[in-house]
Length: 255
Image (cartoon, rainbow, N blue to C red; front, side):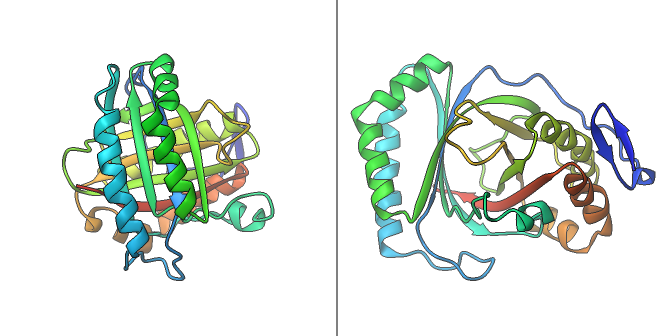
């Protein structure tokens, strides 16, 4: 094991190229994640009536919120599968880490923190949050900045969308190991987009960072996570060496 500015590196011989990053966006984000339908397998196959009803309501409420000046985009997501990738660090710390099974997510992008505050004080937003809380067994709201970026995530085109919920002893170390391992995804899955969200309300959210990205099809990502040994040796093992754990969930956009 070697150390690089407090970043602990294992299996260094694999040596993937450094990920190509561009400047982060200047946007602020509101990430609303809720657990509505219980799933006992990695697959989110069925959708309950209460969830269908909520999604329909949220689509209408979000159309109204989208009219606020300074709102850039609002996207809604339904979970489809929990892929391989949960780290050992998560499994060893379930007493203090929430096991993420968020099957419905709303991501709001706004031009500034002021606009986010305006959204949060809007009666429609408050009503939407109240209804989400009513039907959820667990939910959380994270206000965030984009701290690192590979490229913009296209929500206008259907695809396979990832929200990866990270937990870590040290957020700075989490950021470093995310950047170190992101080169694997760029090479092995041809990933060309990613928006890394850094929570501003750290005292409320249970996650250190949340990564968001997109692929066109499941075949672009799932076989790599399942069959490529380097995913564990280069990505997951380096997460664990740095006391970092990931909980990935794949989604589709609600149209």
